[in-house]
Image 1 (spheres, helix red, strand yellow):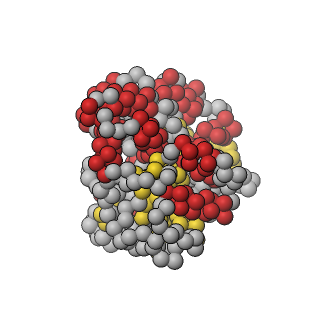
Image 2 (cartoon, helix red, strand yellow; image 1 turned 60 degrees about the horizontal axis):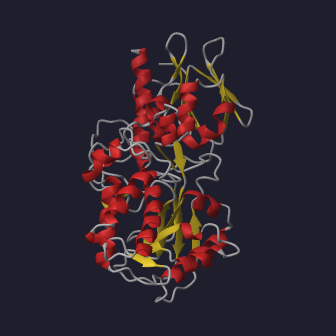
Image 3 (cartoon, helix red, strand yellow; image 1 turned 60 degrees about the vertical axis):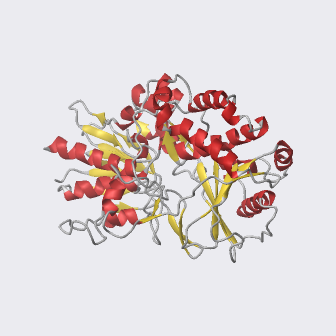
Length: 476
């Protein structure tokens, strides 16, 4: 098949689309990648004793997960050491008793995504935050929680808000919809790690470059298809010859029978009014405008040797008002430090590393700071909460900057009340723009277009295969 297909983006959805097209006889495929690497929001880098993932990190589940199916039997995944319980520490250094921690965390995770509240959540006309606040406050009034002070309950509420935002990829749970819009978790271990190779392994799996499994599958090498540093500025899809014209920032241009656009929702939100000619239809624009892509960032700290014990599982941060006031008055980092929701060990292959997580507005403020300021700020939080330990300076620090990177503008997507109000949804985000003969001219893929698995790599890969199948079936 000699139809010209241009795929924008060499992330998991773009590579998935390319491999499926090539394996089905489409030979004229080009991938335009704005950056200088394959991966998109999968970014495995060397750091510490091994590698770390700056973006996607775990294979989330085993059942109905295409990433797991690709990896199964190939000795590339391992079960992570599971954190048994949250470890809560208040900002004055006080440990919250285990029984209180368990009581609060069991309640919170049950309200957030437990089976006991599925029906109530799905029928609730409001945000995740509104639902949680209502049910949380009702529970706290019962005898079961009478031993928990209002101050501690409020501190935990603030912490869980940040944890929920990191799980959802949201800026605030007061914007995310309780109607999760057909989203499905994959059963099984949700923190399968990639041993010593990182999530970038998935690209070798997509290209059949790792032995094991079905040996009849040929290797499909997409690297020769990729043109790097090709940032697309314009997609003109109403050309007289029936082709689409793609123009890049460096002045180069390409024509195509079909364009598969896999840029992040963040880039679509920022550029859709200038990127497409003519303007996208209102139904498409409303879905782009209504869906949210939040910011979830990591801060990796490396030490000469661990200051923590062998079985340490990290901790989560609860802020007392007195220390909260003090940290907000920090002249350099006062606008984001309270957003660090905790620090946790990385994995046994990285014995000297810990990772802190920060989300939403706090993460975006963190991204504005220098590396030295972020390192100093993170060390300050460690010493604030772990007063009983002698914590040395970290030897190295590296952090993600998903929002400030113009090629991403965020981490992963979620479904919002705004999308509901605009009658936008994931399905409309995934719909192609067709010509008068119903030929798909501009197609859309990426995690934000996956109905059941948005925000996940397996959703991104499914979306790339979906758009490849759209063309395969069209030409049948």
